Structure formats: C-alpha cells, structure tokens
Image (cartoon, rainbow, N blue to C red; front, side):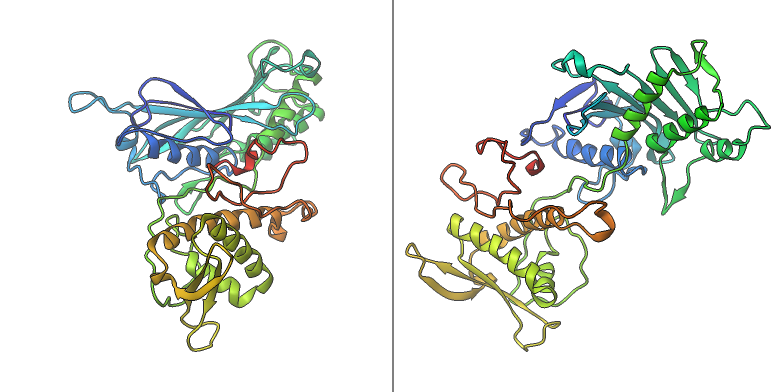
Length: 414
C-alpha cells in the first residue's frame, strides 16, 4: 500500500489521503482517528485481496454499526448516508504494463452494518515511470452490488466501456453469464465479494470465442491492447496470502504457572505463552529458532539473556512456567527466575518480539498449502538485532543485497 484515502469515514469528513512509508507512525490526541485508520487498513485489504465483506467489529478494532462509522456532524447534523475508502497498491515485480492499481469502495447501510455497494479498480502510472513502460493504455473495472438482484460488472478503456451482460439467449455461455451476475454468496454471515481477476479473465475468454458485450460508451469491442491492459490489471488485483497483522496494545498478564489452553489468536498477546510452550514441546527446531531470536533481543536490550519453558510435573502437555535468566556485563549468566519475578518490562515486550519472530518464520517457511513456489533460501537470514538510538532493536528479516543497510526492509512495515 502506497497511500490510503477516506471520506465520510468516522472523523474524516472531507476526502483525505495518507501516504504510507516503509515505517509509518500515527501520532495524535484521543479521538483523532488513529484506531479508525488502522481498522480501515485491515478492512480494505480484506475486500481487495481476500475478497470478502469486512467486519468492522472484529477485535482488536470494534468500530460499531454503520451509524457509528459514517461521519456524523454532531447532535444536530445528519449522519452521512454513504462513506468511501480506498488505497493505492503497487506491485514492484511487474516488469511490463501498469504496476499500480487504485481500489475504491463505497459503503451504504445494510441493516445496522456497513455493506460495500460499489467496488472500483483502475490503473495509475507513476510520474517517474519511463515512457518505455507506458505501453498499455489505462483501464478500469467496476462492480455494482445492489441490495437485491444481480450485480453488474463494467470494464473501461480509452476506446469505450463494456458491460458483462448476456444479449443472446442462445449463447453457449448463458449459464456462465447467469452465475457471474448472481447475487454474492453469504458465508458465515458475510458476503463473498466478486473477484476482479476472475471476472476480467472470463470476459476476455468469452471475447476470444466470438462473444460481444453491450457498449455503455464507444462503438467497438475492446482492442487486443485494451484486453492486455485489463488482464494485466486483473493480475495485480488477484488475492494474496500475506495480510496485515492487526495488533493491539500488549496487555500482558504474567502468571507464575500457566495452564495449557487451545491455541487461539489474540491481538493483545495473550496466546504467546501457550504458543511458546507448544513449540517447546512439539517442534524443537522451531523452538530453538524462536528462542535464539528472543535471547538475541533480550541481551541487546539488557532485559534477559536466556529463556526456557519448564514443566513442574515433567509432563509436556501439563501446566508450565516461563523462566528467564539475566546476563551481566561480562555475559555472566544469573539464576533462572520466573517471569513474574523478572520485571514487568520483560512480560510486556515478550508478546511483541515473539509475534514479530512468528511472522518472520511464517514468511520464510510458509505452510505447504500456501507455498505455490519453492521455499526461500535460509542462508541470507540474519537474526542479529539492529541498534536503534543505542538501544536494542527488533530482529531483522531477510537482507536484500542491493538494499543499503540503513534503509528498512519494506516487509518490516508494521
């Protein structure tokens, strides 16, 4: 994401744009929209890449109903009947054609909840792009999703605008047309949103077999060059596996002894002790990797030098304790102490650093179902902490040999 826009969303009445950097800090008083902005990032990602209706009440961000999300002008002012949001996405791996796609979504009230009713994707050209890259025309695609009835899908290019609609009842693709324009499917109480990639590729496939589409503007069908631009945009808009991690303030509640519990995600870090104990008992290789990263950070920050999981009764699946040992200036290890006795700072920082290490490990060793490509090489990974202002920093991720060491890696953006 390069930038995010919002209008009539919470406290953002006028259309406002926030540009994102590799590391972006939000600073402001209470009620100035910091939490709203973070919730919007996650909602936009869910719609654009996970293709599902967002839930603005998912922890750790609960924004309430449509009336609480749409901008209100106070006691005497009316609440906006619609709000919109969007973001500019760049695919730096694209060597031909457009690299940037702008997504825009319009919301209206559906009962008490906000529901996307219009989704638009359009290509943009960076100002610094060389003319040699601008070989394909600009294009766009748009869904309109009514409360009842079939949806509509339109694509556009410099030569005109065309709608996905069947004008021939004898068409061999009649069943496909009916399925593509049907109302979105509802799963687990949330609508599945249509896919730009899927719809554009089907329109292109129909056109190669002789199908024509009704003209909204213009007289001819899309040219081969315009189809190439649309298919390239569809490729940029296809779903991805890595979504933003929505965190919350660490509210660590250290315990002297933890009871084993099912592994459930907790944005505030409450699942971290169970996660560490599960690794220590089930996956020694993964546990040694995470433990090494924690100990590197703990030594650099001066908080602790070693960490271990202890089971008082010797049973790996039973109650457990987290213990740390401090190291002196000469790397002399002190006695192991219970997390409760090691100071509140250790229990506060443990969930944050562990989550970063867990995210890093999931990128280096993704699940088999999500790979789709050979696992990345391990040789370039560095766990040495980065010094920030003379204090310990967070563990680094894979180093890019062409990236200067003083520039943060883009995947480290949080």
